Length: 186
Image (cartoon, rainbow, N blue to C red; front, side):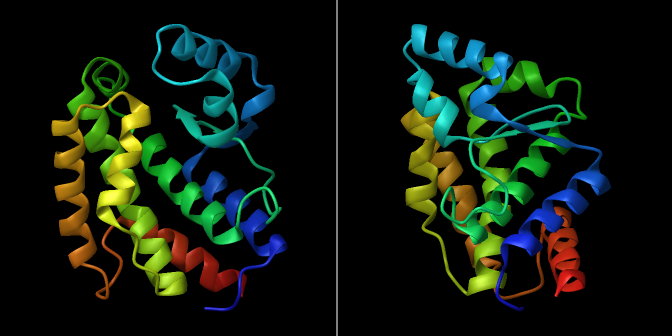
């Protein structure tokens, strides 16, 4: 795979969004994200500014990103590609009408939904840079999602199993689609 460029990453996002019927929104300036961030801050889950500036968020077909697409200074390009694929997993999860309620009300479901999406991060980092992510470190980020230690352990176990599949063909359909698009963009 050729080295990622700003132009390639922007086009990648455009094509992924076209394929999945999603759109990208600047998260820090989105009123709805400010409101959600304020709520999360008020209930003690996550600092509003951290929510707005650190985490991408998907609600149905809208992907809210805290970085400028293609700008490696705002986030490394490989990270932007991985976030794109990860967030498209969530867009797919929103096709299940029970997903939003389960994600909000069940820390276990939230942890597993995130683990399923993080599995694509593992794939993208492996297939694009031969980097193996740490299941423990990635699962630990779920503390910021209000997940319990037991939920985090379940997510870590899921990610350990997913990491064992690396080296074979991409497992998830989102990663397969992403890698095919990136190959076209070379």
